[in-house]
Length: 417
Ligand code: ADE
Image (cartoon, rainbow, N blue to C red; front, side):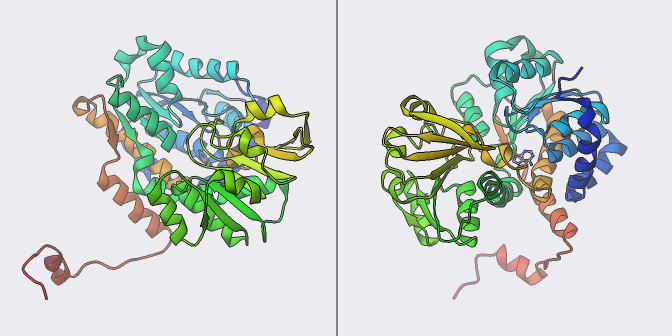
């Protein structure tokens, strides 16, 4: 029922899943309630997510809630094979994911999940939904709804909604405060640097670190790169974000200018061909280039491959391209998200909140399916607020409460100067 690398990897996967669980107290609390109340009883739930230790804990919680869960990878390079093995063997969750799977296998795995006829789809990048829309429309009548984990997926789904082609309701988990303000910012900030460092073992202090995109991921990455002593340069297309980056203390300039001075480049824009051959050509000898956006479209590697005189794997995760000029450009993880391909993705304590949103959104979807239209919905604010409260409590942090007088003041307009 599963397609994984090797079942022998399961014991290591199980230990690592248990390690991640220690950093996920909010999810644990939900799992405990789910076990008693079974809000997802009998619901077939197909998940297309990065197969990591954190995702394993999410799937275990959903199963505890009574769902029949099955999973495939949302990226060909992010799968942790030991985790996939343990999910299949120890937790009896059918899993279709092998690190390094080719494009054909990636889609074969998506179809394997769809063949199990999910009633809820849980996506990270909207590949389940878009495959259903393009190739498996027969499944639509049986689907209650779906959830979406990431910015890129939400953009794709909103475009479907705008074009009146979205076939069922979706909850945009990414847009919850307890998701993007933490996962995108602190998660991507830390795990992207983790990936770059594991892949290269280079010192960042004193280096020029160029970041494409100043959304929540870019903001987090800039903050952490600066913390390690890098000189951060940002390139942007949005004047507000460009302005924010300037006021946060970074240099902002077009990529054509940044290309000449950068030592390390990372894209986190969600858009296509952000660093192109015209920019690669301008880079310094030995420049390092990576992407941490969802899809491997941000670096124009096809052009680089075509023009390169030589390409060689110089170390794990690093491809060295020799340009006609003789200069070398080092590309990490073939332009796939460096934080999951070379490292382990975001740490458990931040995925705790993202995946708490996923579980509560799935429960909400099942409970309110009759009322929801074919639209992209936000996570209900009270769920977002609850997750923040429980997360704070789990960290041993308490905050103040408004006094009666303060409540009245905030609800009145008569008082002034
Ligand atoms: N996306 C980013 N980091 C992740 C992780 N650790 N698990 C699942 N999805 C992720």
